[in-house]
Image (cartoon, rainbow, N blue to C red; front, side):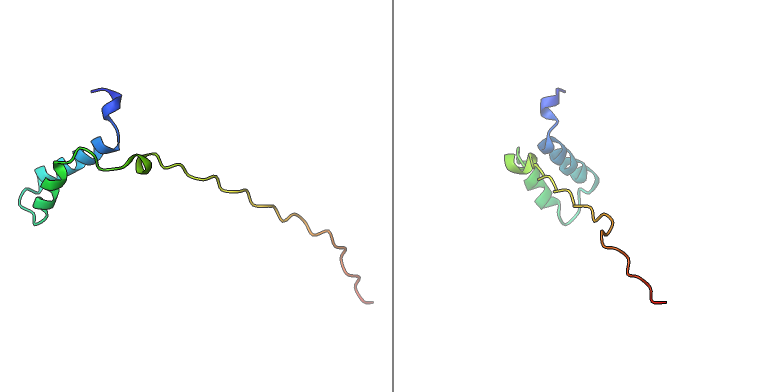
Length: 72
């Protein structure tokens, strides 16, 4: 098995086939059998989702105001 076959579609199809193996008489078997016939499950844009970088928060730092004088 080469690394080219190990993509999202490979793992999704494997999960579907495992489900069918373990639950052959389930009420959803027909749906899973239809899914097993497909060769592709995710589109190119879904499989290569690139997250946007989150901007760094500005630190608050210490307050620069002078402390209030106490009344004596």
